[in-house]
Length: 555
Image 1: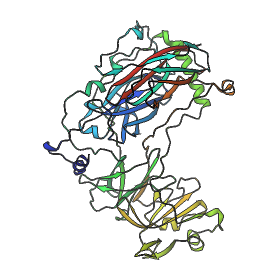
Image 2: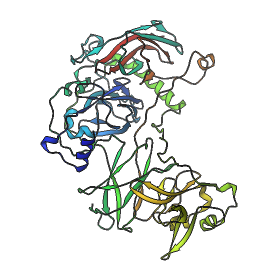
Image 3: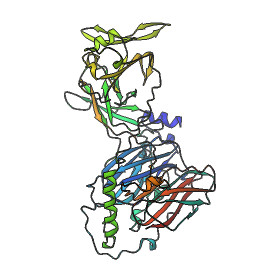
Image 4: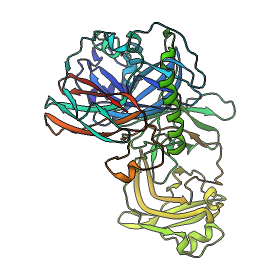
């Protein structure tokens, strides 16, 4: 792995140095057909070309595409080659088939042909049209022969029919011992046949020979690599400046600071870790005044090769089923607070404990930051240099502590280049000040210490930036999660007056078997009635796919 990283860092490969490692990614979804406003639940598994589980990339990318152009995009964090994510479909998302495409940056060196891809259907129940068609019953249509190695455990339900709001369980028997990962989803039965257009291209592409490898895209085996572009603020053109000192931060509580690495093509790379759930990114250039800024480049492909999609036709026989599902979805969205994007924020990688911590409510509230630092903040102070105010922090120099001149100052996670911004800041917005006495090495830079200021709302309000600093919207990687469901073995939950319109009754993307050949999985039905299906999917350590499905009714 070290040699791959080394040559990729150089940005090129010779023919003899092209690595034999080939990464592939497989995606499971909780179902194949969605309504606008529902959430696509995803599980991602990385493998090598022989389908054996591979632990290499830490980040994956998923795009929902209509023909060639993306509609929705997410970044997913991978742990041990496994990740989970969710794509929330807007309520006005148009009816049609869409391409669900997944890849890692390392896979981009081989091109689109090796990406995971499958089609899903979306129905907008406020914009739909119906067609009288001779639909064949989905259960009578054979699935495409994928020629994959497969293990089929036995599923057994404790009932064939369940009442609404009831705790049920099914037993999974015949599980192999060598399971790499296993997941279960229980959803309403698919009402459309899964014809070839719904099948995954993953299994078509994994067996192809070694494809020409470009070596252009760095593997993200440490964490998400944020790519920036240096832009001249006067000309608004991209500029290559090899000596620029740049960094990014992620506004939130905690210190997440990453220095930039300049590339000859004009890009600036920021190798990050632990930034899941972030919604903003702050960029700063330290050593060029206000001449330049860093703009963030999208990590996605966004535009793909043309591929026509089948016409989406809805038979009138499904009208009542879809209407009931649509009404249940609207009630679910109205009464639930679970329709926000995955916002689990990782812990800050900066684990040092502050030498001094000051909660300003515990002190006299002064009207200027200079007074705050002078009267009770230990370990840091303002001093005037060349007509500007600077913050200096105590640092250990040769065994004795002295005030240094190169601290890292951050407000709500935003790196502050000009300390006058802090000098002129309203201290009534500040809740806490932490002082870390140095020295510290962060992202390749040496700092005498760190001054961390946190506001009450963590939103860096009223902070004025010069043109070398900017804050941009940025959706960081989604981290692993489980969907919580009501427990209807508890009587008070069963009698709740809040509607339960779940179409996906259960989504467990990572079930632990502990080497057992048989396990029991509980689930809870909702207010929806009709046919449902429980689907078991997984992969063994030898690359065998695990797949089984069982059906039941809710009345």
